[in-house]
Amino acid sequence: MPVRAAVDVCDLAPSYVSAMAPYQPGKPLSELERELGIAGAVKLASNENPLGPSPRVLAALKSALGEIARYPDGNGFELKRAIARRHGVPESAIILGNGSNDVLELVARTFLTPGAAAVYAQYAFAVYPLVTQATGATGIAVAARNFGHDLNAMARAVADQVKVVFVANPNNPTGTLLRPREVLTFLEAVSPRVLVVLDEAYAEYLPDELKPESVAWLAQFPNLIVTRTFSKAFGLAGLRVGYGLAHPEVADLMNRVRQPFNVNSLAQVAAVAALDDEAFVAQSRELNRQGMVQITSGLRSLGIDFIPSYGNFVTFRVPDAQGVYDRLLRLGVIVRPIASYGMPDYLRVTIGLRDENGRFLSALEQAFSR
Image (cartoon, rainbow, N blue to C red; front, top):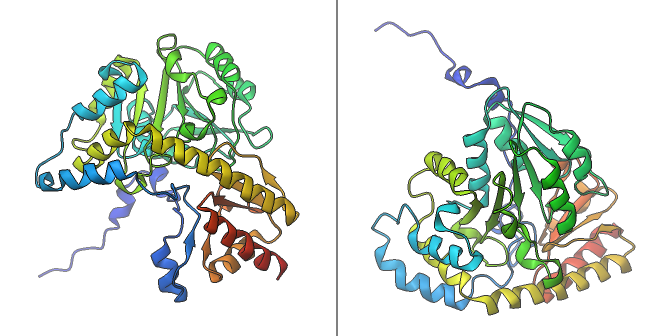
C-alpha cells in the first residue's frame, strides 16, 4: 500500500485561530494537591462563592436527578420565565448560556466577522479578545484609566468597522466600578448601530445604592445587551449557567446560533431555585462585605498596595508576583496570577470564608517576607 504524503491538517485552521492563546483558568485544588502532595489546600483563585450553592438549590437538584436521561428543555422555558419575572422583561428578550462566557461568545459569533472590530478596555475580562479573535475580527484595547474603563476614550475608538463594545461592570480582574450615570452617558454617545455589551457578572455583590440600572435601559437602547451569571453570588460555577438580556430581535439572532441544549437540565433547575432564594444571595453579599474588610485590612497591615474592588476579589501588587504566587502554592493557598492581563506585578485573591481569608493573609506574610 503506498504511503500517503504527510499533511498538516492544522494548516486548515484560519491563521487568526492558530494564533490564539487559550484561556488559562485558575489552578484546581486537585491539581495542586497532586503536584505538591498538599492536602487541605485553599483555593481563592476563581471568584467562586465560598458558601457553595444554597440548600434550596441542593434540594432542587436532588429532586431532578431522576430526569437526567432526558434531554434538557432546549428553550429553557422555566428558567426564562423565572428570569423574566425577576427583571420584568419578556421571555423573548432572554438568551441562555453555558455560563455568561457562552453568551459573550454568542455575541461574537452573531455579530463579528473578519474585517469587523470590537472595542474593550485594557485590563478587562480576557474572554473579550478571545471571542473577538476567534471570529477573525480585530480587537481594539483602549488604555485603562485607574485600572478601569475610560468610557470617553472607548467612545472615541468606535470607528466604522466597530460592531461591538464590551464593558465589564464591575470589571474583572481589577474590580473597578462605573457609576450608572457614566454608563448611561456612554450609551447615549455610542452609535445605535453598535452593540454595547454590559457584562455584569458581579452585579449581585453590589450594595443597593450601587445596583446597576442597565435592565431598565433596554427599552431605551435596542443596541444594549446585558449579561449575568449564576457562577458567582449564586454559587453555581460548576453547573455553567448564565444569561443575556437584549432587544427581542437581537436575542432572536443570537438564539439562532446558540447550540441546542447548551444549558443542561440540572443547571436550569438549579438556576430557577437560586433566583428564588434571595436570602442566600443576601447572605453571600454580606459574607463578601465582611471578607473584603478582612482582606483589605490585612493587606494594608502588610504594606501591600491593592486596587479597591466592587467584586468578590481583590487585586494586589507585590514584588516578584510570580515568585510569591509559587510560594503561596507551596503553603497550600491558590490565588490567581494575572500577568496574562498585562499586570505581571499583581495577583488576584477571591474573598473566601473567614478562616480561608486568614490563612491567605498568614501565608502571604510568609511568602512576602522570604
